Image 1 (cartoon, helix red, strand yellow):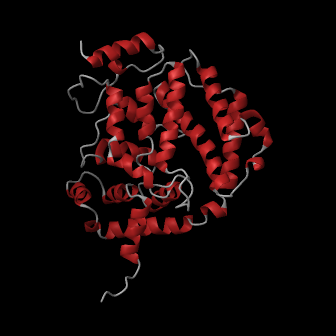
Image 2 (tube, rainbow, N blue to C red; image 1 turned 90 degrees about the horizontal axis):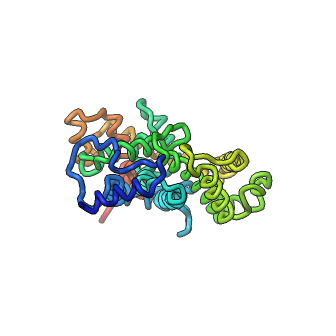
Image 3 (cartoon, helix red, strand yellow; image 1 turned 45 degrees about the horizontal axis):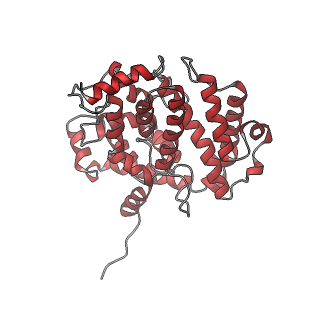
Length: 335
């Protein structure tokens, strides 16, 4: 018996009856030979981890645009914190940790440079619209590996597509990542806002912190324990009403005082101007895009609008600024 088969049998012995089992996966878009060591979800996790899109997350904004400091979260560190929270809960609930980790590591692969400001810019300028969760699926299905995609399992792609609040993940693992995403960004965005002088811990409404805790560590501990307690041996992922309402209230407070704060977000108009102009120039001069994207255009694989979004969404913050400067900022004469 191969190692993979042993691990698949171990899942059936150990995991909750509500977990997703590797051997019962709905499979991949393209059939391929099974690995002799790794079950399918572990294999998907590894493919995401080694993808170029994953590596680029380290130079993409989470909330604060190009902060002057080494300790602010990036899109990559956010992704790792989501993964860690989700895996901790999954282990306690006896869910499939490999599936949870694959979904968590892949959920933001399609995010634009400069966070949600970049996403709003593309959504407004492109008549097709733009949603980072759908773009993340497009990254793993189409854009990675020079157009071949990563050929991930259906369960991983479903979890990535449905990680936003409006999504309906088909697996408990997907639902867990959806909730862990919120737990992660609420806590680390508070930490970054305090670091940036946007707010102080004591500014947070006591009606929420008295329930969740008065530090990031305490709040994480409270939320994680609550999800585990409320979801144990149940076919759903739940929080208690008290903790859920407090978390939602704290999230709304962050929208009002951090996400829309003029100090933290004062540069967003410039970002949206930059992304909008990059989109227009690629629509007018698609030959400026790399060969992979030109080939997709010539082969009729997607519209010019979609391909322009593909290229821009894949940029890091620094590369987007460099490209904008190259096209729109006059250069000094060289001797």
